[in-house]
Image (cartoon, rainbow, N blue to C red; front, side, top):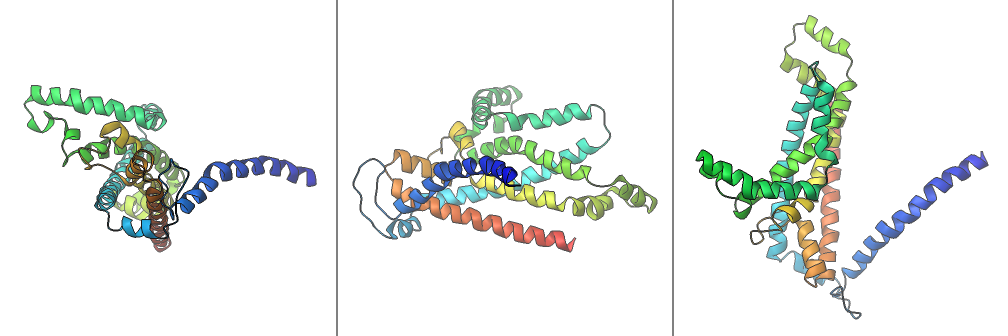
Amino acid sequence: MTKRLTAFYWMTVPAVILFFIFMTLPALQGIYYSFTNWNGFGKHYDFVGFKNYINIFTDNNVGNAYWFTFKFAIVTTILINILSLLIALGLNAKIKFRNFFRGIYFLPNILSVLIVGYIFNYLFSNVFTIWGKNLGVSAFSTNILGNEHLAWIGIVIVAVWQGIAFNTILYLAGLQTIPTSLYEASNLDGASRWQEFWKITFPLIAPFFTINMVLAMKNSLMVFDQIIALTGGGPGRATQSISHLIYTGGFQGGEFAYQSANSVIYFIVIAIISVLQLKFLQGRETDM
């Protein structure tokens, strides 16, 4: 038994050490610097207490970033889960080339977010605009990424297209756990497809719905790569997310300590939202 435990320790302890060095320690350093006025480059800094945290709540740039991030996260989370659930239901049915379609729909998940973003940037800037002009559709004749009112929609399209893949796989896994005998019994009782979905399918995949909602919301709140590749936070600051603001302000704008405080608040907000989601959605699982 001692030898077996030793093997387990050798497998887990190195991972814990690496996690502490590259994740926990930098996070603790960030919290420490959030109470200073360090610009990220010089050797000297002073402690300013909660001044950075107070200033964040009066900063219009921070407010705009939070507004965009929440708006983006809510819309993206809803669309990803609705579309991925519909696709999973279709791929779970007995259709021809089912395995082929499953592979096609999972393909976006293995592609780099930045690469996908740059490809869609080219499509929005060149391909779609040419198609719009040739077809006489004015809505597609201009690059929406250059419009401060429409640029966020382009980011949503890219995020949803790529985010659907992973959620579809999870929903498919949940659908595979439902016994076919339940559907056979419902057919004998004369239940419609809609009744089967609400009374059998959705209640039994509720745990997978909870996981997908929490993961999709978390990933959407942390949106960064798509913005870097598509808009760079523009036009102006119209599509600047919290992550992008922390990066540009902290590493390029000399606001390392200030954005460290923003990061701490950002972490707390994501944690609270995730806990509330889990509590509410798991409560619905019990009711079902």
